[in-house]
Image 1 (cartoon, each protein chain N blue to C red):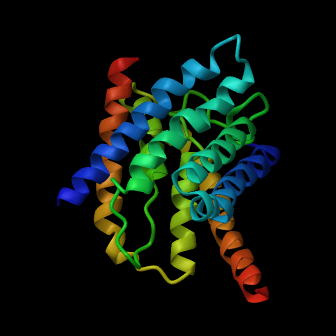
Image 2: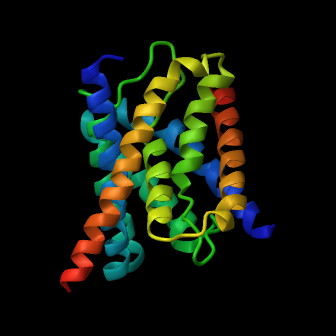
Length: 119
Length: 113
């Protein structure tokens, strides 16, 4: 349970950081689009050290990995839902993103296997 | 969403977990915490520009709550774990608490806005 406290707290912080800070970086005129790029390094890179390098989010050996992205994704969508946006309007986007994500996960596994076989 | 929007949304959802799975671990393996930081910056920063930048691949619904490319990472990494023989049952508590953390975060974001 103490490990899952880490999952919950680490996930909540990741979600708040991504959506509270990214807009500041991306909206800074002096930085332009480079500000949006910096969000990857300054926010996700940093919070990754907490959640996955140190391991605040509990991922036991042999289990399917649960990435902090799950918490970030839920936080971004729930922010709108709490604000009254209808979840149904987001479902087409979510469906097609999920289709793409499934392909990406499978492609990576196939290509990694192929690379490993060559070695 | 039209056929073009579907094509770009699927492609945007595909590229992010693919890049994460291919190279983030390599950065950690070779350069530890700094390797992970740098790879995180490149993968997430560059994918963000493609998926949510000026010509966004992931098409959002009108008046809809935000679907971040993080959905793609979370789902894609789980799919990868499943097809490489990971135990899904063992990750259920973490999945549950990650979602709870996300809902708490979402509320804080709503309250702060």
